[in-house]
Image 1 (tube, rainbow, N blue to C red):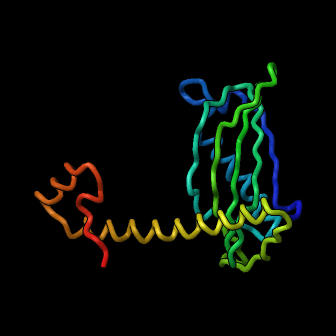
Image 2 (image 1 turned 135 degrees about the vertical axis):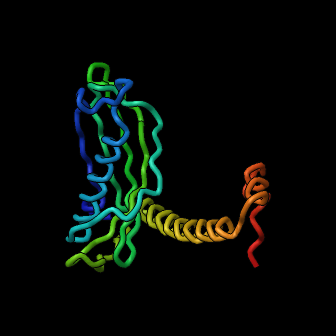
Length: 183
């Protein structure tokens, strides 16, 4: 992968970044993740990019005011117009030097030209690690599409369900207990 495939950003967390319990606000961290993913996608594509989705954001450990955040974004997947970027966040206590992995996220960005999705160059995989990231990115995209289809199917079942049957669904321990099999 060329050097455009990795972005590193660091920022000191100050009091204006704190939430109501004195830790760094998760939404602020998500904004930094989005910025790192944007830079990674824009460098690769050479275009303006927008966020299409956050597959997930895992908050593994709280971040303290005064910590230095280090974000590393990796270009993992490239489709025809979209790019998948994995972002890891580490928090460094600048007094003690302790570094903790605080967040992991996966962001999908779409390149645009004149407001419409635009083609992006393919990802060059130079190492086995690059190839693993690309394969995992393909898998994530496939799972995201399958999940969207499954959610639409469940929403369709629920839309047609009323009254006591809904109460039965609510009492079930698992969605699999009431969701009809697909044929």
